[in-house]
Each structure stands twice: as structure tokens, then as C-alpha cells.
Length: 342
Ligand code: EPU
Image 1 (spheres, rainbow, N blue to C red):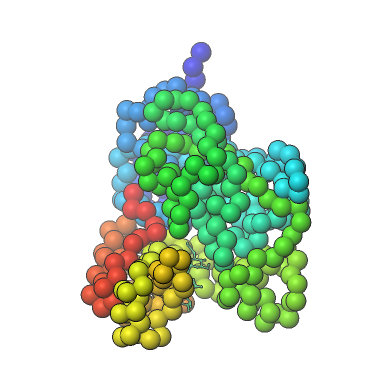
Image 2 (image 1 turned 90 degrees about the vertical axis):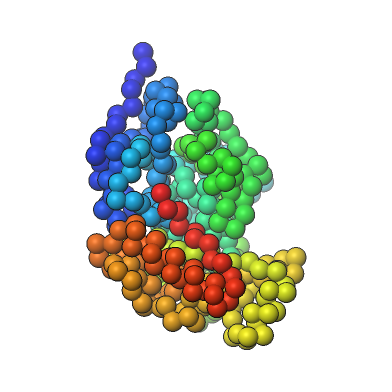
């Protein structure tokens, strides 16, 4: 006999998005077990109504009301699948809290996630937007993704090589949007720890603390400290982390901008292209610490938009659009949002 998924109606989402927007969903389905996923697939609910897959809600801007089904993967579990040639294959449920998962891996001697410590959100979202920080991205550690094909109702494994990972991007965010529901991820981690200090600001922070050769725990702690000094604590100030992506421009555009703004912060992005620090441009235009309505630009990091109290999705949209228009008119560069408007 087929079990039906449990649907909560008129479900409040304020606690389910780090921006703290008091949204309400027409329907809400929590997935805690394999049976929950199978029941949802067999119900064909997602083929008959609009839906949105909401993990930790750390990268979304919700509307006041969502007139479809919010699907919330909440299945836990972390286990070692096997070890081969110094690589530990570790599987984690989509609902595992990312930061706790990173800590647990460090405690178990499974390495490669240290630079990604303290990022808000859940494991299932990591491959979707290829989360990244301090020189590492999910694509460096994801081996395989297990998911349900929503259209066909079947389960399948997808190899990392087929995910189309890019900067804050994967096929799950592009052509596969609304097609796959991820329930577990397998990570390829290393049994030996080799610190990745390729991100200059991180190497500096480690050196400033008088650490020569950090242990995995020390490195993760430094990452957490640097993050906490720049990013708002989601428990006290609502935000979605970096709101905009750092734009990548061609060499000619870069030279034109640099001739007018010699101080602009940029990084070579390969093929003669450059990644520009959006935070620098937004700060340069005087937005840091500014407010529009109930949304504001965080005073310590201009890439982050914050909830000043009672903020709606519309408030965020107005502020984001104003920043995009202003940066475009001065630098000729169109910023793209990293956060997703639902
Ligand atoms: N900068 C400014 N003003 C600002 C912010 C940044 O001048 O208000 C300059 C900094 O001085 C620095 C450069 O911009 O020279 C880069 O800043 P930072 O190292 O803080 O990184 P970011 O580009 O602002 C990105 C990620 C973050 C990630 C950090 C560290 C994106 C969109 N954001 O931010 O990711 O933690 O690098 O790797 O790529 C997130 O995605 O939510 C996120 C927090």
C-alpha cells in the first residue's frame, strides 16, 4: 500500500530561511526518511503543483506567500562508505546541517572540508550551488549525488563530473532545476590532512595567529573566526550570506575599469578574464551600512544584505535592484544575485 506524504498547510517559514522573512507556504512537506521520499514520488504531488526545494534556507529570498509546496529534505545520517588509496568516501543525508557535518568529518579524520567550515545551510544544497569559501568549493570534494528524478519518479546516482559545476553553479541550478530532488551526497575526503592556504586572506589570518602549520581543527577554527568577523550571525541578524556573485569580466573590460578605478580588487579568473570583488564596488559606491525600507547593506561586508527587522522579500528586491542599477551605471558591470528569489 502506498503511504501518502504528510502535507502541512499554511505553514510559517520564518524559521526556515536565514533572512527571517515571515513567509507562509500553502503546503509544506518534510522528508525525514527514504519512505518519505518514496511516498512523495509515488503521490505525483510535485508533477501536479508548483514546488520549491528548501534546504537550510540560507540562500533564498521568500515571498510573503508561496502558493505551492515547499519540499524540505530533512533526512540525517553520516557514514563512511569505504576507504581506498587514502580517500575516505563519506555519505551524508541531505538534511544534515553543513557546519555540523564539517566538524564531524574533522573529528573523524576525514579531510578537505576545513575551508568550508561554518557555512550555513544543509548538505543537500552544497552541490546545487557549488558552495565555496576560502579557496575551496563543493566540487573539490563531492564524488556522487543521489537523487530522485521528479518527472520519472526513479532514483539515480549522478557523478560529480556530470554535475556541470561552476562558480556558485551546477546543472541542478540550471537545466535540471525542478527535475531532481537530492537526498544524499557522497564526498571524497582525504585521510591525510594537507592545509589549503591558497586563499591569501586565509593564509594571512593563519600566520597572524602565529600558526606555522595548522592542524585541520586549527584551520577550520581560523576560517570560522574570519567568517564570523565579516558575516552576520544568522541567529541574530537575518541575511543570505553573500547576496551577489563576484562578476567575471573579459580583459578589455577589466582594463577599462581599472584605468578609472586603479584600486579595484580583482583576481585573475583564467583565459585572460578577471573576477571583480563585487563587495568592493558596492562599498565604493557608498552602499555599505545603508538601508532602504527594512532591508540594509551589512556594515562589515557590502556583499551581504541584511534584514533590519520585519523585512519582506519585496524590500530585499528593491534594495538589490537599486544596487545593481547603481553599480551598472558606474562600472558598466551587471551584478548577478547569488541568492535565489523564490
Ligand atoms: N571587499 C571590499 N568591501 C566589502 C567586501 C569585500 O572592499 O564590503 C573586498 C575585500 O577587501 C577583499 C575582496 O573584496 O579584497 C574579497 O572579499 P572577501 O575575501 O571577503 O570575499 P568576497 O568576495 O566578499 C567570497 C564569497 C564568500 C566567501 C568569501 C571567502 C562570493 C559571492 N562570496 O566573498 O561566500 O565566504 O569569498 O572565500 O563568492 C557566500 O557565498 O555566502 C559567501 C559568504
